[in-house]
Image (cartoon, rainbow, N blue to C red):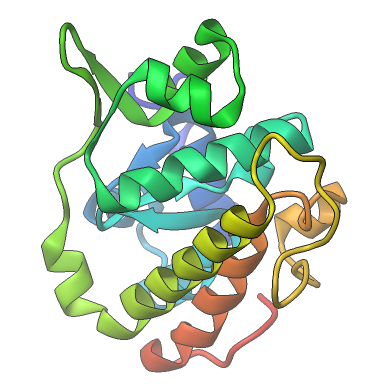
Length: 212
């Protein structure tokens, strides 16, 4: 089963963003079309408004935010850097990721396995096909997510993964949403920046920015 131990009845009792987050904790990555099916009958605008609280856009698909996927700030930073790479390139090798993130081979493989499929002799490939249809249908949201990834790239250039985290990302940690309740919203650079940008973009789908 795609979601072992999780009933549709239980999902229906949750807010759209909570449903999406619960689903993505099981799968880590999913297309918007499939999320819509599993989150039905939640309205599309409610789901689009809530998704940036729990997920980031990679290759037109939604990936669980690193602040929610990782137990430590360092792992979240490394995972964010990996996701940033996948926004631009569908392929990555274990060695390239392990070397750049200063991770063991095993740790690098474990993070890659969350969102990519191993291709023997060719490294790893992002799990899902690029969803250009979603990006075309929701250009404002897609643009906001791309801009947030650019900000993350600038942060990583200034503060490499080998260095200790010193500050929260530009724009600050989210003031609401699941990540801030964990107390680690600021630890995941893409988590804070992309979430804030996503909330801004939801104006285009009929919901006000900020809050849930």
